Image 1: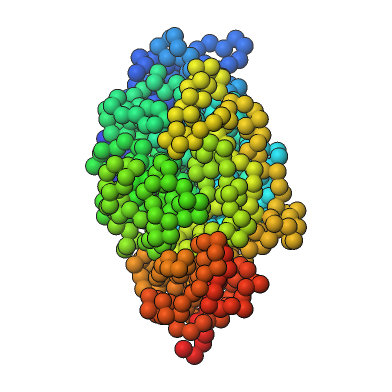
Image 2: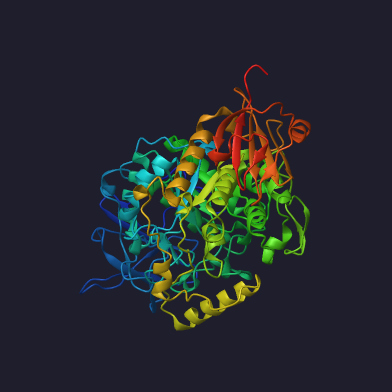
Length: 638
């Protein structure tokens, strides 16, 4: 019998899980002399491999215990179409399919990376000498491959990587790539976690994109969904208890990470992470909505992920970053498993976004009601979280835990992202409501924060086109449900009027960026905004005062205000002069009383200007023009 190569990082958190120590690969994988097909189907009494070729007969698979079936064959090269037959009746695609060339309802296809049979499968094809980035150096740029360029493909994205590298981005974060129904989707309706969406270029296109990113010194972060699967093309129920019997998420059934047979459900998703990291050589994962992962086990699934990530990182000699999206403000996400944590590197700070949005737009609907303008922005800037155990009105209960002793690298801060833009009724960006000077002020809050900055595609030059929610489902009932669901979701924010139809191709086209940043004129509005972003990137990377604090309550970074409409931050690195950052958060000229800075921040004197968003007002050191940002460096000799 042909055996697969063994992988040191197959094992979840340790040998804590019952059953075989190495549960092995899933799907169609290369082995010496052929292809191994393997599927977990504990609800089936028998499983047959059905190869889609004239004259083929069903091939019974061997039951190896605990619901796993396997069969090694020598005549199924890359490109072979196949399905599994359960109990001699139901014929379905592979739950761990690497490729769905005919969509979510069609047969699966064997896919091997180029040259896969000539080396060990745990090695990614063409592994680059790229050494990655320490977590503290990450600056994320989120993009949707289908709308980032006119081509809407991985190859189209490659053409704009030089722009991102020149901007100063260090990590390209790709919205979910799992195969979804139709040609258009945000990616959160994926039903084949192992299969890369063909509309973007499939797995070969992703390999090409990752190599191109690494050649330019850019890390690649994949957004993955481990809290639910999309409804259309979801056939996992027929194979096994993949879903919780007791819990749902806002988007569908919750996954089974802590009930009967959950060890094997965990293995399915851990193996998915291993496959994506190893084969595509990516540098990290952003986990969608971890607050919707129902897991009451003593050792969480997310902790298993962090142990697996550490093993992969150690074996290939560079980091594999993990970032959690969560609205819980739970410090345990970034504590190591040895301290009863989940071991992630960082988590999103929704509080920073919400406080910033309330400060600059005055919105108070939905969850924005929990935040005060200015004051809570200062808290988020200084502490990472605003809510650290206080009652949150929109939640109806206490929310959060202390973040004071966490490092700055534990927080990802942003002014815009796919959710906070795309889940608005009109998909409107901040550029639709704020003037140029305010956009620059917002940029400085994000890029000079003592945390990991995050930009959404087009933000760096003030893109004005919307980013809307779009789908291309084939199920008419699902299409109707999505349309109605969007209307109800917007009602919570008091947004009324016609909702752009997610299913209409024009909604997708309206969301596509049309501006090539490389062609922006320095004298245009977009060119000026882009130039200021580049200046902020250079300052953040070059000045030692902007090194991230080891603790958010460190004396090396302090925030004061807002007073008189001014927010002030003092930063100091282990060496070099201190800096003072001043933001005018309002549309009025504001005074900056030196006595306030001296009393609250211990800042003496005027300092030497090293950045100013409005040079024409630089001659008035004790005043800031509307939305002006000024960075002062402590004068030597003090």
